Amino acid sequence: MKNPYLLPYLAIGIVLLYGLYNYLFRSSPSSHSAPLRNTFKPISPTAYTTRDYIEHVIVSGSSKLHFKKNEVMEGGFVSREVAPGVSCYVVTLAGEKCAYPQEASLLYGSNCAGCHGDDGKGVHGTYPNLTRRPLLGLQK
Image (cartoon, rainbow, N blue to C red; front, side, top):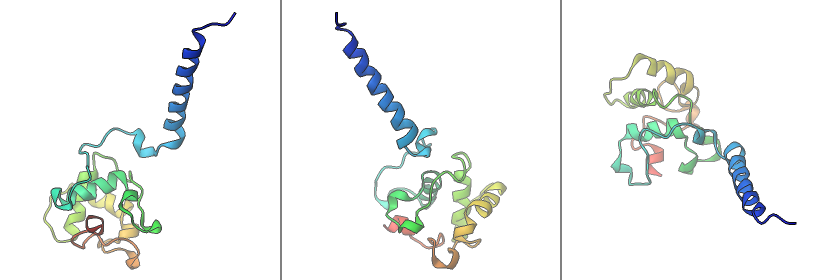
């Protein structure tokens, strides 16, 4: 005799397994962490500051900005908690004033300077110049 209640349970099980598969194997690693302190919506470049933009790229990466394949930066080189300090340090490379914690310059030097250079102008012109205004990603 067939159990009429088996099909709904089987369907629920399949949906749960599919969701688990997507979570573990198809989503990006950054989507597993806590949500951003600020959510960045597709708005005009002038609606948020250069620091906000830099912080967003540090946390989320630049894959959605349509850079060349070798210029895409993955997010998460520093934690969400210290990203505002690092973005503050980055704007000082362009001559803007910003009070940043001492660890921000150390984190920039160990995580960002390898591609962007100690001065933020990009190593051999292959990575975006962080001192340019507007930044390349804001312009795009």
